[in-house]
Image (cartoon, rainbow, N blue to C red; front, side, top):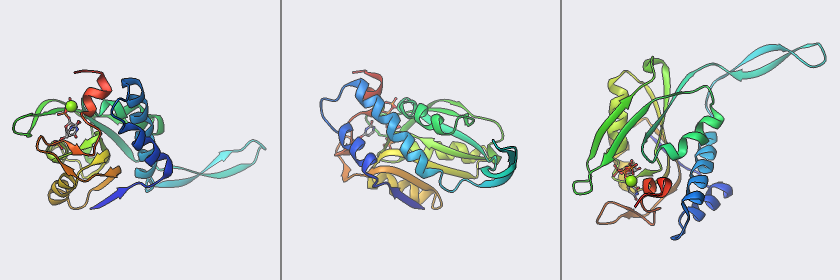
Length: 209
Ligand SMILES: O=P(O)(O)OC[C@H]1O[C@H](OP(=O)(O)OP(=O)(O)O)[C@H](O)[C@@H]1O
Ligand SMILES: O=c1cc[nH]c(=O)[nH]1
Ligand SMILES: [Mg+2]
């Protein structure tokens, strides 16, 4: 598995702004969407293209490179993953959406599933799982397990911030998966929050608590 920690100045600038303690819901939400878009650009660099002939403006036939038509499903993890969805679909507008709902139990830190609705033909699709936070990794591994159990063979992960603990847990379970992130942070605190991190991303995106 590779971890792609994107160092692009725009990515680092936007991540830096998201770390500000008093950030508004509006700004946090906007930045989550913008970062999701930039990380999607990186995560889709290896999508296959093929040459097709089209009618150009001059009347000549011209060869162009178009996506080969690989089927993609975007998998936002409720709730916080929804804050990244528009950014991803801006770049991959024809992707099918598969939605999973899991929350992390505050005491045990174990993921609790409460919703799942998947696109069809998962065995033929690239699944791009999106969630702002990869902390212990329990939620991500549970989501990847659901996809694998339904036949999905090709999965990628996009998170805004990852903790080393979460990366290791995903890596142990899925050695071949690629993770794209704006930041690999330092550690988890005693409540399982990423430090320095972003705080509770779901609450900040939805304006709750
Ligand atoms: O790596 P883990 O330790 O499993 O933690 C990460 C999960 O925790 C957060 O969700 P949360 O449980 O707060 O739910 P929410 O999106 O509804 O706020 C976050 O969005 C991830 O889904
Ligand atoms: O730091 C963290 C960890 C889990 N969930 C969050 O929203 N933030
Ligand atoms: Mg939350």
